[in-house]
Amino acid sequence: MAVTDIEAFVHADGRDALVREVRQKIDALGIDYLYLQFVSVTGRIMGKGIPADHWESVAEKGFQLVYGATMNLFLNRHGDYLGYGPEAAELVGIPEPETFCQLPWDRRVARLWCTLFRNREEREDPGGFLTADCRGNLRRIHAEFQQTHGMHMRSGTEPEMMWLRRGEDGGPAGGYSKPYCYHIDQFESLRPVYMKVIDYARAMGLDMIQGDHEDAPGQLELNFAFDDCLRTADRLTTYRQICAQVAREFNLIACFMTKPFMGLSGNGCHHNISLWRGGTEKVKTLGQKQIAAMEAVFTYRTGGENTFMPDGDDPQMPGIVGQHAIGGIVKHLDALTAIGCSTVNSYRRLWDTGFWAPVFKDWGFQNRTTGLRISAPGRFEFRSVDAMVNPYLMAAALLKAMDDGIRNKIPCGEPEERNIYAAMEAGKQVQKLPMSLGDALKALAADEVIRSALPGEMYRLYHEYKTDEWERFMHTSTDWDLRTYLDYLP
Image (cartoon, rainbow, N blue to C red; front, side):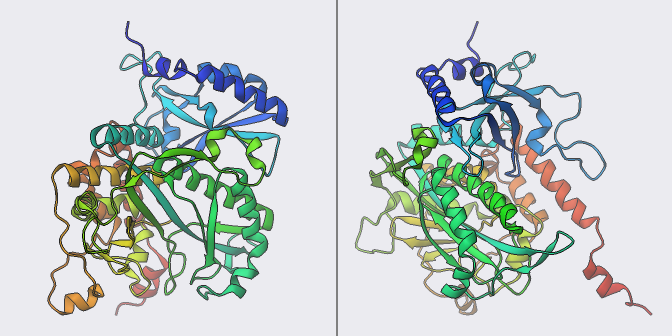
């Protein structure tokens, strides 16, 4: 009888030793409770909690949870559960011991990421990898890319978000600071908040490297070092979890909504990506706090050959691998936008022109008016992505776009050095990105390459969830409708 995916995972070489090491951490740190976490189709952190006494049992058997948890267990606009009905089986989540990390805000609790599987007793593919697991999908897609091309993707994100005051009704009551970009005094006004974020982040393996005040009320961008794309996605998700906790401590709102205010910059999340050969795993010392987590939490991949570096006389033109990667990304920008700009509100950012959001399918060196820019030699900044993104889906989609570009040697053309609007006035023909969630979903449906980044059931689930979101919006009368049409006639 063939070994199932779940059996192979649980009995992988070296895992028993890691399970024992987690027990040693639990006992040494006084851990009482464990969060077993995974990520839903929209990027929410889901899972279960268990007393630490049961660690060994759950490490072997996992926990069970309804399949619909991968869809946030939400209802569609017709009142039916999204994705899976109540008759569906239960998934099995198996914790990854190497991801054990104590929560710095409550040292009695630790968290572990989990890989999701189909139930062991299902009639079809029992114990198989669950394709509704966006995190597991990224791991497998990245492994396939590495096997095919001998390269791996490293990524770094620029997570913009706003710290908003909380009103008496619990809702937002304006930004905590003034909308002055790069002003140290406004940055200083948020110092107690961002220093707490940084303390927690470093304790959970995020190598914080820089930060600044952006140009919207209460808007900060705090960056951490780039790494293997899966670990970067985990760290971005952890960063959001940290911000939510700090907001509770300061009675603020940690707002990752893409465009809470029109006429001001929205919350982007540019992805800086590169493809590498080789390199080594290095544990970074972030103070003395790594004792509160497994070594892998503090591990980063460094060194090796960056294949995007220029290899000719033009310092602005990437090497041939990078050129083909650009070709693939630009070719698939429409469908990629459905992943990077994943909400109805995302397109407020694209329509509010003049605030640095890209709306055109082109690329250039240090050109912020295009959907893709070379932000530095050897690094591409994918700009059609905002703070609401599911980073696991985004990384998988970018891998598929670059895979297509490299396999088929898709040319990238010449970089656009002009402001794209000036280039268009001069006669350049440039296509716009989809300008609504509905149009972006149509582009995704028509793009087999990017759809393959959502394998198995994932595309069906993503399409269903986001189509329902778009239909809910179209099914709603807004304040704008009332202001515009209440007295429209006679």
